[in-house]
Length: 208
Image 1 (tube, rainbow, N blue to C red):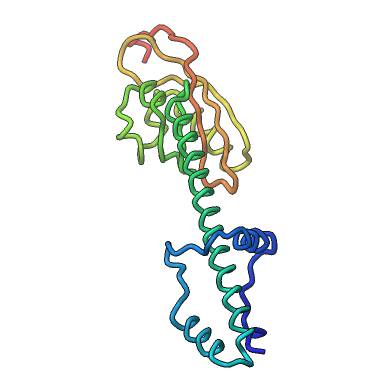
Image 2 (cartoon, rainbow, N blue to C red; image 1 turned 30 degrees about the vertical axis):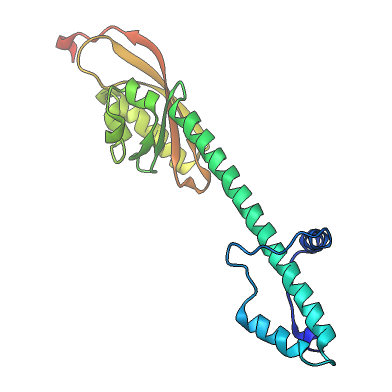
């Protein structure tokens, strides 16, 4: 039988739903490019023209209709998944951007991939200027060895390290920050947060 050579395989539950829709009178979709092609119509016409294969034509037509409904349902599922992913990404961006602490994503060498609004405000820099900049340049010179040691340990051992550093600034009280760093799986990125602790008096310039 010609129909035995036709394989339109899809997951059984989806097929059952598609067949149920057809039984309920829901027609196959005519949108989205899933109309029956000319080659399939030619095969159906040839089969229907012979009494011996007319039954096969009806079966094949049913298979094509079921398959069209299945494709439409798969498209609906993909669109739903895409919308859910977009919503999840939007929530992540909101949490990252508006987190109450300075949050930075770093390359293993310490270069900034991105920083949030609180991070830019904490170090008094333009957020657009953060990508590509070394995170060490945002802290005071005497704090850079401690921060570098944290980053090195994260790259080597992980999974979490902490220290305290002073923000780089000219004059006025020094801003002491707590650093918490974590390494992403496979060490692709480092995630570092900076939390304000307190302000300390500026050191005596004669002692610097």
